[in-house]
Length: 518
Ligand code: IDC
Picture (cartoon, helix red, strand yellow):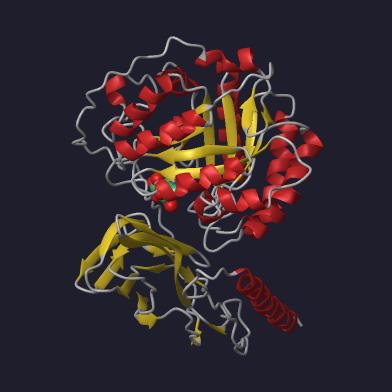
């Protein structure tokens, strides 16, 4: 009896997975844009169970595709007479077991150059581009995925047609259907996020930061509840107001920087807002094994600290691995209901409902999600600012501006930039969005590459700041922490978590603090 019930349950569960995969896939295919070169073809193939045996350790063997590789051309443009394209890739793991040490080989036209890249090591030799993991993404989690991407300069238009993923001893190509049995469960989860204490060789920035003797520290007392008027944020007196913010790194990984003294240190340089970034589906995420109670406590401490300091604070549902916010919509609803109930009476709390939709997620999909989450917040909090992320890692504000969310007030649309990667073409999207009348907020940015690491581009950073000044945009920088990557605000040798002196800040950190002090 016991065994029969279990067998039926297993068959029903597997059928549900198949139906869901077919359903989701059908929807994704409808949503694909023309620019997607290699379409994602996650097709559930036949599914069957092995005969279950009598013991508790019965294993299920499911016949389905194990891993998948997707590489899409999401953006092409001409720069100085050369063709450029942004290629975004994903390695997807459809199994219940984590897999390690992936390699992607892509054939590119001869004479190509990789201008920028993120989330991988990129080695171009002739026409062969080999992409291998960096320290934090060696593992493709069970049912998870690893995003990567690059910007390529080619002599002619380029479509990625020859792409091979090597993983777990086999090869996969875009659109493959691989009928292979899933392996038995093992546990290979590893902590991938660690700050290092190595000495950095960062040059000291030569420019002095003039600590702003201004009102940043008590901004909320002066400016009160913020709202949206036209394309601007205005304060309680109807005056245009700009948030000058710093985002934490993932509070799932670096909770120690969520403290009042650290925020107070930043406020001395004109920082009037903090963004609390809580990953949802990456390692230790709110929806991927993180301790929800602990994460909520960290948010609570962060909000309290900001409130005591008179700073604004964003509660950020930091989607990334979960490309489409609808993936964890139910958890998002519960979470935002809880948060907005708790903070309804406060003027300084702002909600960011989906950090960066990606992986081909369309604006229609994000908008549908927003239209469900916003009312959940509004039921408790009638007028708090709500930030909605946009497709392609919060770049496509132009697309959102053509079909904005209707009948809702105090909504902002997120654009994110990493100035060494995202330049003129993304700034043009901001111009388009604003000319179409939607309010845009830079809720995350840095002058590093999109990976959060690599070289800093001050020239492009200055151009972004010009745009921010021109439209009085609010801006947040990624990220408060000492992780050994160039976007970190602190040098990696700095181990204290507050009481920062000017010299403790990294080059990127100093640059932002200088902008905010002006
Ligand atoms: C990066 C972190 C890096 C971490 C990685 C996880 O800097 O330490 O290992 O996430 O995937 C974003 C994301 C933000 C990224 C950042 C830099 O919102 O989570 O942080 N970035 O890659 N969008 C564009 C860049």
